[in-house]
Image (spheres, rainbow, N blue to C red):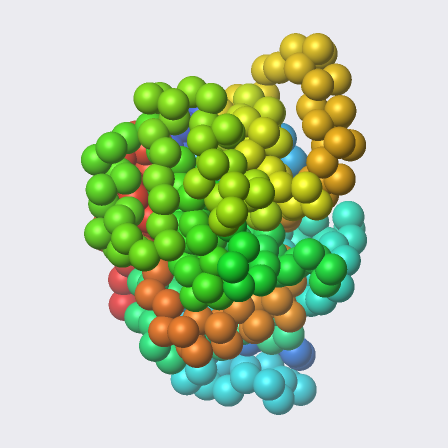
Length: 359
């Protein structure tokens, strides 16, 4: 879509050849676009990073990406201009664009994937960007821009996994298992605690486990070091409410961790397939075993591709109600974005990694 140009310059990073973190180059000569009909101009104050951003920059992402794209899907800022016909937002509103702009509500359509920020189209690692007003949501008043920037991918993915199915929504007294101590996992834990559920967190690091307990507290939180307990599925089932198994699992490991997740799962439970950080190489015999486990447990196993604008608004209302504060591990300056990427890649973080955008 063409936009009218004004001679104000925008600082933005763009990927060049997807050869690594250093392939992102800063462009200070881009003109700031003005919003057309139904659009708003956002001045970003902060963005947060996801594992997907690392994959895209290294040429390891499985979905198509636009050459020379502005990276990073998750940002928060303020509306500085509105186009003709915009009624739901005004100048000064604090907002975030949805990860998939065209996913307004209901079932995700394949065509909508072409509107995924930071990959298929330009993302948020820049000072200004123009987006459809209907694709932007107001961020919770209780959060800073740095905190709100963590919501579009990690938080909404966790929310969709727990509440995305009408007949299998998270209920008080159930048990939720989250893998690792990254953003999706910790948001899942926070939402579960707010709902009155029991939480089980798996990690390979006792140091990270201690940090998580400091953030979340001890009440209704159990932890498993999966290096010390490789067969953690049985242990998780023992720790679940009444020993009946886990009702919801946020599966970020992928195929290599799925067998243990199924071992932990309660009859009729749900597994949200979110990531593949543990790898994707499994034998066909393991795959056949997984199929039988799914059948015998009446399990619901579904992919969770972020969420809709409608879900984003519902989640933000819950965050406001329960005063949930995102866990931000570290905030980097705009010029130090490479350090932010390297830090996320090191997996030393607990929670989210954020980059501030200059004024």
